[in-house]
Image (cartoon, rainbow, N blue to C red; front, side, top):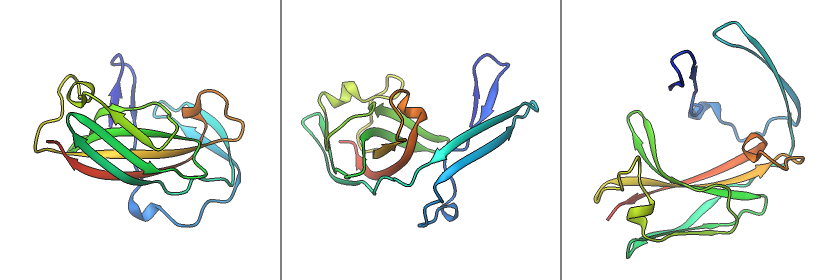
Length: 165
């Protein structure tokens, strides 16, 4: 996807690897160095330490939309340090994010007054349309104290489809 801030800057981001890029074998822990050459021939060197801890799979155990309240439950994963929940709609162009939490703890999220609190650019979910509930379990790098989004060690994601009523 192309992003543009002021017409002078664009970046191409790849959202997810293909299924065949995944493996059940974790990568070897250690320091990894990345040498990145931008489209404008600027070289960027980045180093990251990959630790041996990882988050186990998260499982959505319940989800319901009743009386304008969306409730989502999941099985807490022992190795997860935080969770995020997103309510999205998949489109031909990617996804529309209607709702997303910051990092939270626990195993339940309840969104009251859902038709007002869940929306995409001011438009609430439409009755009869399918949406995706996504629960992500996070494990952070050992020395991460701030800027957790930049210090993620591993992520486990579970998705379920819900038809809006």
